[in-house]
Length: 251
Ligand SMILES: NC(=O)c1ccc[n+]([C@@H]2O[C@H](COP(=O)([O-])OP(=O)(O)OC[C@H]3O[C@@H](n4cnc5c(N)ncnc54)[C@H](OP(=O)(O)O)[C@@H]3O)[C@@H](O)[C@H]2O)c1
Image (cartoon, rainbow, N blue to C red; front, top):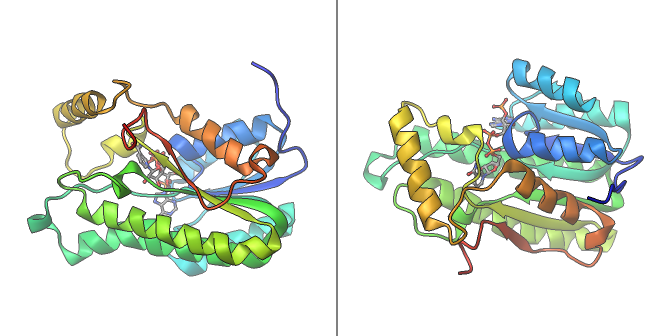
């Protein structure tokens, strides 16, 4: 594969860069010369991500808007204005509608929608004009999957919100896009509280069958789409939702 150097001298900030898709993107950005800042809650995986990518790793909970703003400020002090913002942090959560509590709703929405909004808001004054923003959506915003009402609503809200970010930032020539993964092999699968190994295997088989390409995606496949939209190769693309899903939504 051709070696690229699309992010040399650029400051890339990732909310949720210590695991799964965010970590794969962090590795890609670092390999192409970016100065990286990334967040997450787990100190252990933050340390590992920093060791792999040379990133400034900041422990920060995206459910707390003040913490997101503090992380941005620290990163800007160290690495300067932000050229690329990747708002990726998210939590899963499956429950049939009858089992959904307000606490369940808040846990998902505080990170996936409210948290993403305030993370983006905090970064606005520090984004370099001409830069790029990518949000991680989900095919869940488009597909009617039983048990997915709360997550789907958060990701559909995020997709709608990203359009407004794109419209408001267009005068500054900042492009804003969404990358929406289909089922992707990351720890998100195992993080559902109380889920057994057998249930994870069954879920995996069910998802594989539902994807037209008959497999689950790899984090690096999603990361490549994120890097593309973050780079000058996508210089005339703003406001889109790019599905990286083996055809799940469109076929
Ligand atoms: N895997 C899939 O099949 C799939 C499909 C569609 C969409 N997505 C979306 O893809 C994104 C990345 O998920 P993933 O699959 O790569 O799962 P993952 O490996 O569990 O990664 C989630 C990332 O978000 C961070 N995060 C979660 N809650 C956070 C919080 N409150 N504050 C700060 N960081 C937080 C995690 O770090 P800490 O745990 O250390 O906080 C981690 O870096 C999410 O937005 C998810 O909804 C995933």
